[in-house]
Image (tube, rainbow, N blue to C red; front, side, top):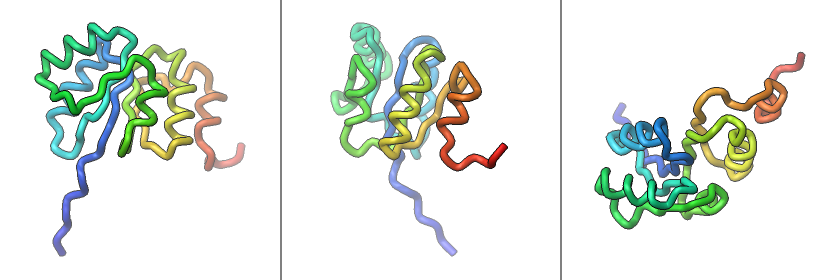
Length: 123
């Protein structure tokens, strides 16, 4: 049986601080991933990373995450922002039908983490 490779997963990275730029570097090296958008409130940081990693103009840069959620063809988001922001971002991404990879902690409260899981066992 032969298996075909799926198309690259198109992803946006939210937060390009210390961890975010490491995640960007690693995802750029993965043949199964295609970074299509970057999100950070610091537009200078985004331009510096665009230059450092030789990113094409096809990689969109946004200063707010809701803009990136509307990016055409997006499959997944990678969240590398302060933990206090995780719940809203993860919830919105899941509601948009996207895959999510988030830094730990998932959220600041176990109840909000559980609320993100629509099919959890009772109890």
